[in-house]
Length: 294
Ligand code: NAD
Image (cartoon, rainbow, N blue to C red; front, side):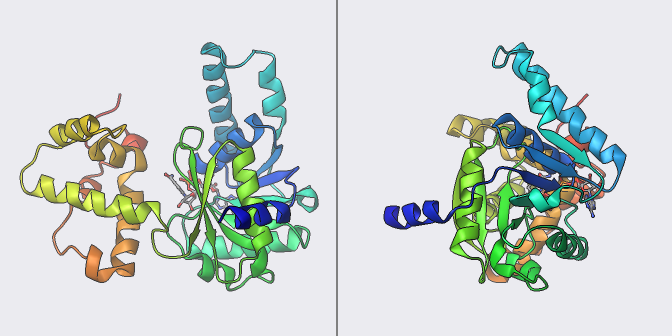
């Protein structure tokens, strides 16, 4: 494996300029992390408000770093100047790797990826940060599927070390190697996985959430379960983690997992995630989930 990793490293293209499509929770995080670690990045969205939010979040995170003494105040401008916000594909011919992080809608992603493919060079690597859509399905309408793979970051991007690099059936070693190298340059720990519902992490996480939902159904107090799992050694319990992920996102991913693994994931009962969702308790995104956020 080590030998193979070395071969991959040799295959990697240098990512001197990256781009992210979508300046939302994930896109904004990717732009911040890339700029912070020294790879300039274009951040494209379809509306100015999205871009403003992405930049505001980056400024907030940088201010926190300065307050904690992890960065000198005069470095802030350099990092912010490495993020180029844009509403069009202006400089995309110079981009070495693109991270698509637009809304989780297969039709939108399909259209955005095909459009982007026309705007970049032939050797540019295209990646998608999708959590639930098959990489092989997204690759189907691309002219250069060999240059395409998944690059799945976790939320919040600046804190979560792991990145899943998802190899599609047609993905080349070069595309995998370039994505792995870029993830490392961002200070992340990449793992290469095959394309399947949930990839690797969500195949572990969602059965765990299912176990939690079963306990709550059986009468367990969610706060107590959280405390127990913290004592077990997890940084946070399942109820709090679901609040971070968001009930809408978790519900959608759960449906994808149940469809992908009907024998293992199917649960005929209404889960705690469904109940929270139906009561408009989405988690931290609307300040109320299992817990309340002021
Ligand atoms: P979000 O709603 O916060 O942001 C999406 C952004 O995409 C918005 O700013 C929107 O204006 C923009 N957008 C929509 N269409 C566009 C287009 N055609 N071109 C450019 N920008 C466009 O969403 P998010 O939570 O950041 O999720 C983005 C992706 O990341 C999804 O695929 C999601 O599944 C995945 N993801 C999310 C999380 C999470 O916890 N939020 C974790 C891992 C992966």
